[in-house]
Structure formats: C-alpha cells, structure tokens
Image (cartoon, rainbow, N blue to C red):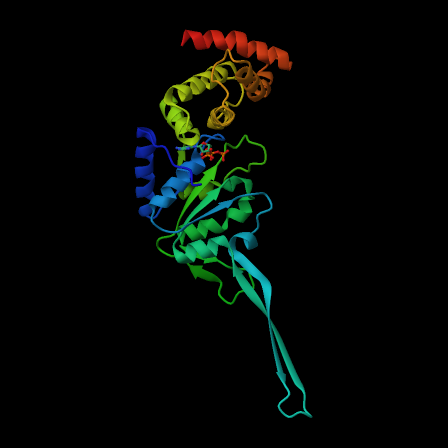
Length: 294
Ligand SMILES: Nc1ncnc2c1ncn2[C@@H]1O[C@H](COP(=O)(O)OP(=O)(O)OP(=O)(O)O)[C@@H](O)[C@H]1O
C-alpha cells in the first residue's frame, strides 16, 4: 500500500520551493538525522514533478558500473546451414550486451532520480555527478562503449539525500558536488504533524495519537543527550498498540511493557537506567507523572 504524505505549513512551503528549484534545472540535497522524513519528502516531491522517478540507495560498494551500467550479458546467435545436405555449416557469434544502469536510464530519459544515502557511496563514485550536473553530459570513460559521453535530458534532476557526517559508514560529501546543489537541512517534524502522521499511518484517533506523541516527547527530553528517538519510535508504539488492541494508557500493564521494550535501550544509552526493571520503573513513575502534568 502506498503511504500517504502528511503535509504541514513548513513541509508545504518547502515542497513548493524545492519543486521550483528542480524545475529551474538545479538538483537539491535533503540532509538530516534518521527518521526526520527526508525520503518521504523526496518521494512526495518526485511524484509532483510529473515525470517517472527512480530511487537508488548509496553504499560503500557502489561502483560506476552499478550507476551507469555495463556489458554484462551476452547475445548468442547461431546459424546452422544444412541446405546442401552433404555440407553442414555452423556460424556462431557471441555479442556482449550493454545493460543500462539507473543513471543512464534516468538521465537520458529525463526522470527524477532520488539518490538516498548518497554519502554512503565512495566520493570517487559520485564524481560522475559533477559533469552530469554542470556540463549536462554523462561521462563514459573506461566503460568500453563507443561514445565517451551521453547527453543529459533537459528534464533530468536529482534529489540527493544524506544523513549527518557523524553517522557510521558515511563519507564526507565532496565540496565540488555540494557546490552544485541546493542543500536543505530538514527540521524535525513538529508535534502537530507528528500526531497527524500517527493517526494517518495507524488509524489511531487524534487523542490516542496525541497521547503517544506526548509520551515520546517526554522520553526524548530525558534522552536528549543521545541521538533523539525519531518519528519511527512513535510509529512503532502507535502501530503495535493499534494492531494488538493494547489500551493506550501508562497505567495499563501491557502498554507499560511495550513502552519498556521500546524505550529501555534509549534510556540505557542516555544513562538513565541499567536494567529492564529499572526502565519499567522509570516509565511507570517518572513518565506517568509527567504525562499527568500535561
Ligand atoms: N510527511 C510525512 N507523512 C507521512 N509519513 C511520514 C512523513 N514523514 C515521515 N513519515 C514516516 O516516518 C518514517 C520515517 O520517514 P523517512 O523514512 O522519510 O525518514 P528519513 O529521514 O528518510 O530516515 P532515514 O534517514 O533513516 O532514511 C516513515 O515510516 C515515513 O513513512
């Protein structure tokens, strides 16, 4: 099922601006911590571009061949001539076949490309984007093709997405590439939008979504020294309660256990608790007190 995109005044305005930058021929770059909504926003924008779009994910093993394509198939043509029955002639030709990679596919046909986690690919792999974005040509040196470049379709544009540089397995983006992009650090979703996303994705009522969003907000506050729990934490809590008909109340045993399972690791990382029972106590005593205060 396709997930619906929930907008807010901030997201609406950002979408409009990013669309206009892309339509003006510039590629854009969304950056921000995990779960802040970068991929959802990129997909939402790509759909509005009214062109086919393609989503790829960077990784440290990604090579130019993976992006551009390669000769990796064979066409076998066999001709058997036995017209004169005493003469048997067999002719076989084997031809390498070129298979387009996502960049050639998207750039020559004018698609919108979403390059998620592009800083997980080696910076040298991403170098080809310098000429794609500036000179509007796809470099094909060393690809064993007759042409040394292919022209880029005028409608081709890229939405790059990255996580912060401090994340494990992330390379620093090249300055020259960043210089060609309009980079927007995505802000954390506001409380109201988070509640709407929860109701929309899980079918919980507004009040139930608000309860869960408030609870996660309190845990975020207690764990503020570590990477904040993203929207995904609220989605997990909301989806599991809904699916299993767990009463959404900090006084309910089942809900307490679920919260403990979801938050123990974060509370431990933040140095608030050590053991599972301490985590449960923390949730039941401290968090319930703060929930009452809301
Ligand atoms: N505006 C939105 N409307 C509906 N759902 C959203 C919205 N933004 C985020 N979500 C939901 O929140 C979750 C996290 O969003 P998303 O995957 O877009 O984040 P991200 O920043 O790309 O994360 P990561 O860096 O880990 O890939 C997803 O389940 C997504 O469906």
